[in-house]
Image (tube, rainbow over all chains, first blue to last red; front, side):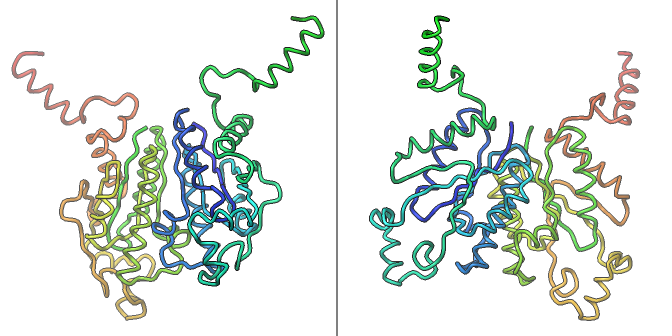
Length: 201
Length: 201
């Protein structure tokens, strides 16, 4: 089985972990081995003691990248679902990754996230109760050319997950599901229409 | 392919990394995916900033154990070649490992290591120039019932590596090499002799 790194990046609450979980379930269905390096799990198991300064965040990301590389070069689909706010260190991890590195930008405007505020963190960050909070008191540098881009303010989680799966299929990184046709339904309809117009069908 | 953790433990200079490299080469020949978590590599990539206090050493070992578990539950043979001086944390890693955990005790008397002193570290440690040096100014707790035991003062590196390979074969963790007979040559000879004695052959 082909291993690769699927690197989610985006603000807190944008839906990185939820999306990773959904995509992982689908890939496991198709026979892949998958591991998710979730921000919280990593801070417990790999990065206890590190804080949220730029240096500590970068060290944390480098460690996740190191482990993702170990896994993906052995045929595992390694997913990172940490915020990873800095472009330079994401690109450093991309360069050191021996298998394919696929960046997924989970976009969501900050005012939508502040409005939702599922964990109440944005409110606290705006009130100054949390320091170094990405997007409020700490920078977030979105990727300019991510391999995959999803929009959690306008798409449902299922739609975003399906978009990621479709893109991975087209990149030949994952097998198509059993019984799948060559192209999407709407494309198929268009091709059929054109062939009928030209009297081939 | 079956994944498991092969956990080397022993004093500095006993030959853990050399042995791991040799065993890894043989396992790769037989089709396994192998990763070695070497003490130095880990301190660079996972544990920068940690020192050699008991607490920091334990954290380092837990991290290696966490990564070995991620790898081995995905079919990789994950080897650790760090000193790992404390029994309690080795046993903790053993308990959290989901696949088989195989401990290899690389034994060598400290006076032999001090005599050899390949890297000149023992001399410095005895002179007090290195603090927290395992076996000199810091404890080393050998395992009581390791799955595999090798003696680097009396065996050659090749002999120790072969012993580890043999044991792993008998534990059904690795396939026998192509063309191998069911049992070792001397055993085979003995069985043949017994069968001849009983007139079966």
